[in-house]
Image (cartoon, rainbow over all chains, first blue to last red; front, side, top):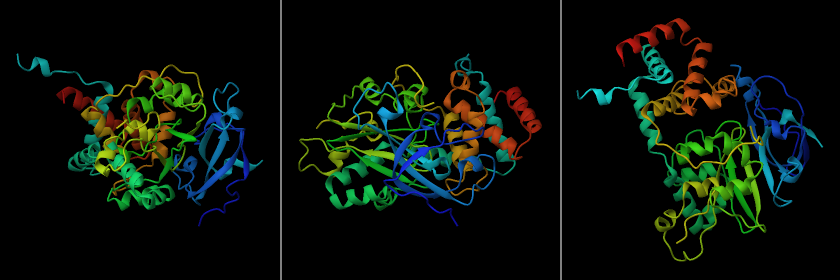
Length: 96
Length: 197
Length: 97
């Protein structure tokens, strides 16, 4: 039984700006940034817990989130619609 | 002496590999035949498998739709065994060019395409392609025009990615086998375009 | 490490050595990808690679990091003990593999 999905494609979401110890699959470079949900990938066991030899259950929603490069990098050279798309677990996201 | 040329002292990590393997075999955790079979299995997986998928998508619009909707099922449809792979295929268009990276380690659709190249796993690629994709692609000799947007896909979790490149011009009427020969591994990662006809 | 300053990408690739392919095979087998009994998760492997520290990227090659991580994970899981590993490594070294 998976946790319920709180976001839908098109929702603006912000990545939590936190730097906990342990194994985390949310890259440093994206923490604190705001993007748009591109899709719900499904529900998966939490890798942070799996890394500690625990089950990582209940499975939790994993989203692909699209971020504009010009908003992520201050010195970005490219088009304003260039994007980086990242899979992020629900517990790292808040409604923006 | 004929033996001299063969002697190479083990490095610490090669020693560790042998020791770990022998311990695990002694404990019945794995067997040598299993290890050998797995090595051979990974050898059998290479970019030509992805090239078949691309060539089919280029020639069959229904397959392309299915591929974009569910990459794993589409691979299996062609008889390609892809255990544990959750594949998302990103389509290049005249407006958008896609490129794949795993900044956190080096996740790669290995069960489809085989082992990734060293550079894909390198610190330099993983640090820079997400921040300056155009510059990195230029280092590969791939220039993406200003009118085309670039999307970088960082495979941070359970999904794996492959780029569906655009079919090169001048290939009208080509069969799948000829088309597949144009599809390179690097074009499915997104750092290059397929070969020209 | 996304976004950190780094040098040019050398399009290098090497043909994997047999021992590297065996490390890769162990990872596949032990994580249960090919249906064998799952003894660890890739998440533990990744965590243990991260625990090697940033200098590991300079000092160790890709499969050196992986063999260290698999070994560490097996120790953590209690599949092998440090003593067993020490004895085995001595034995292998002495016989010259």
